Image 1 (cartoon, helix red, strand yellow):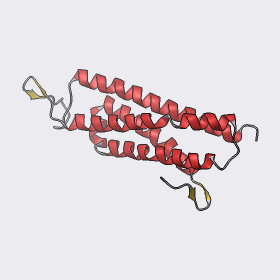
Image 2 (cartoon, rainbow, N blue to C red):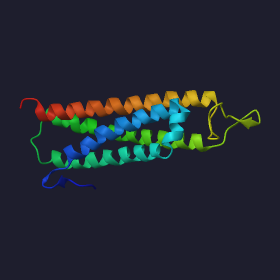
Image 3 (spheres, helix red, strand yellow):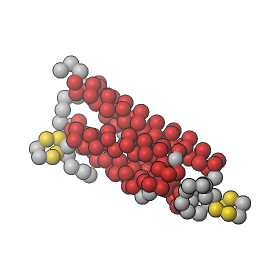
Image 4 (cartoon, rainbow, N blue to C red):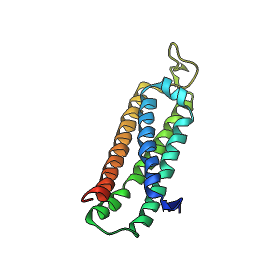
Length: 166
């Protein structure tokens, strides 16, 4: 699917660095954008684009990892890491979907009582109602937490598989 080597070395550790940066960054931005409309207005389309970049790196890292797994010595730690690596893709998909929905949510013109839901000091950008914003924040926090925790757990298991006993 993706690159398995880069300049003669396995691509997995290189691609993993992109995952470790992009997934938590997309998660953080999702929560900030959900919690503060002013951040969402500033981020705009960058939020779903960032989440899409994070999403794309996950299967690339998984594919390169599977290639590398076939070429290194088997161990219980490596098997555990490989199994855990499959668990990040659903979280990355949820991050992207959440980011895209949040972006769409703030692009839709909301009406409350026949007038716009504009607040003092805000421009004419759409601001959803309080209940919808609270739901967005709660879902964003859940998805972001799951994505970051899973990224950490997988990375930790990979580091242990490589460095324990060395």
